[in-house]
Amino acid sequence: MILSAGTPAVDAGDTAWLLAATALVLLMTPGLALFYGGMVRSKSVLNMLMMSFVSIALVTVVWLVAGYSLAFGPDAGGIGLIGDLSHLGMHGIGPASVTGHVPTLLFATFQLTFAIITAALISGAVADRARFGAWVVFVLVWTLAVYVPVAHWVFGGGWIASRLHALDFAGGTVVEVCSGASGLALAIVLGPRLGFRKDAMRPHNLPLVLLGAGLLWFGWFGFNAGSALGANGLAAAAFLDTQAAGCAGLLGWLVVEKRRDGHPTTLGAASGSVAGLVAITPACGSVDLLGAVVVGLAAGVLCSYAVSWKFRWGVDDSLDVVGVHLTGGVVGTLLIGLLASATMTGGPKGLLYGGGLGQLGRQGVAVLAVGAYAFAVTYALGKGVDRLMGFRASEDEERTGLDLTLHAETAYDHGVLTHGTTHGSFLTGHSAHPGMSNAGMSHAAPSQDRSPLG
Image 1 (tube, rainbow, N blue to C red):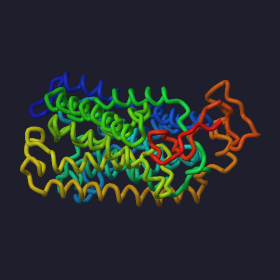
Image 2: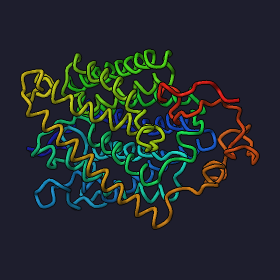
Image 3: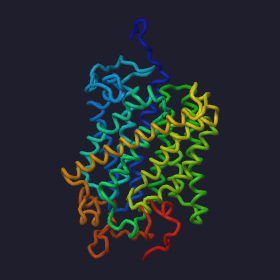
Image 4: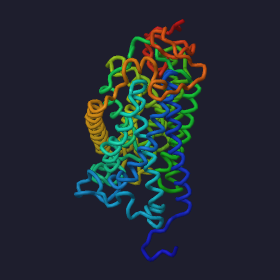
């Protein structure tokens, strides 16, 4: 195609990189499914996998029909809250449409993968007890009511980006704070699992957890470096920052475990790496390599303590979406205000780099606005779905396991349904530790009994 004067040209290198990055980010949702699936009990692992996989299909439909237009279309009313419907059904966007130096269709697909994993992340907060049909309805409405407006505020030229001038390179607020606050709201709506803080809820397959964490780490390079929208130096810096923060988060979590519990664990390594990756997501385009190490280390340490808060507050965030994603997202977004380097941002600087308190204040406002909005709307939406069709599984369904009762399947051939056990669960021979969360030993309070049950 011959471009007329003034028509932006598609850069083949940038396009090739963003194609690869888009595939990497999409792979993160199956990775998340394995990560979450390994952390639940064997009687509900298929349900956990399905909640992530169905999110891929549901969010894609919503995004192509109206989500992209509302998030990235021209601002409706000029106040930075939501886009218009000029691209309803992707109207007016064809192969010749260009955003930056890449095809707009590719940019829209890249952003779609962000929306998908954000919705899927919430499922970890309500694992083991949510009805699948209610989850389907929730994801469809939540994507439009919560994710799309926040994406417009931060990524689509809305008020947080254009007026507040808060920095969020790849989604610390849009993905991490939004999913964490939404998970907290939904966990409150559904209430705790049967036996929370009493019964053993140990992960049924730690190798699966580590496999999922590895896929997430691999995909995160597309998530962060792909957000540069080009094969350039900024992408390379974001790529390296991502690696450094993931490693620092892993080591920080393990140090806390060793000092607090006496031993480092595989689940701690997986969780710590994810915590570091979560925190660097907003900051990878704003901090230098030293800053990335600090961000990752801070997240690994703080998130390792934050996951135990649910026991004190009585809020059953099953797989620690709040403890890792909300906490890590807040840590990474706020630390931009301290560690942002002009060599990365091209202008704004953090407090420790001579920039004063202004940027830190802007980061704080962004976190509070996104967190409060996501929590309030998700809570109202969760209550609405619960009243309409019942969001919480019945006691019998939960005790028997959601795989059999909701999907008529079992994950393992050796699983045998038994009615003589206390929980009516599959007889799989797993040992358990009393009082531990579904996230396992590394997420338990240090005072908990660690002797296995027979």
